[in-house]
Length: 376
Image (tube, rainbow, N blue to C red):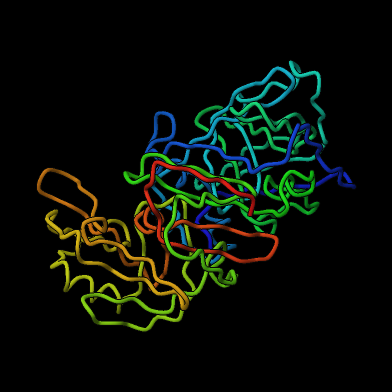
């Protein structure tokens, strides 16, 4: 199951060349991002919903769930010898980097290589927008590293932002596979593994991704390792149980960690318990059940999500989203027993994704102003 945009790649050439980094020393790569509910002049929900249901269908999601995605993580990338800036949405469910047509002009870069491969994006209205794969220099706002010969796509999409996919290679649909960013970092000897940690700030308006490293000051307790459950359709793991007000409900089911969703989705049994605790009023938007609740929630009561060897605690006060001065939404909704954790959960957790070992590690997030980044 996956919520993410269709990226059909028709590979026309053979062979794979590894990108090369130029770097003075080896260390984790930290990138900061902003979390917004808009993408350019449209909402993030409109941006994610633009793309075809074909990708959603392939990964087990109906179009309804594609429309549930409503936030974006913005990062600037710089392509080519002349450092052409393009703002992209960081996405843990897609593997490709692609930029819109105005984001890259190959003719102005002396290091551009047209691979001859076609890139195709399908839209919900049935139309397609073709593009091409290129290899060129990739930089970020940090001075290092500089990645030469990195493969990405330039789409004919003429508005909005592109996407920087950092998922595993099994999320690619290209017939000729190539290294997405985490794997390219490993292949170039920058990081020991294709891995990264994800941290959201306390207000959910900013965060950071650290490739090949973790920040030990951003979590408390043990960073506990779990196997990735591929049945989630992406980067997910097994949820053992949930405890509310001293009452524990067994779950033992995979749950997807989705960086494009502010809320979460839980099964009917869990939602029934939440409805009782929060005295929720259910309303429908599309096919998804949302909950209106009081904004006055205690900070000393918790939803406790147990993954088997550790627990992530979510205060009741952090489980609601203010819509007006008097109205709040519960941070969880219901659709056909789907299980998804969006930002409502990710703000409380420090998450380390190890694509090499196929594991996800979790700990309770700490909003310390201190930082201690180490290689993972």
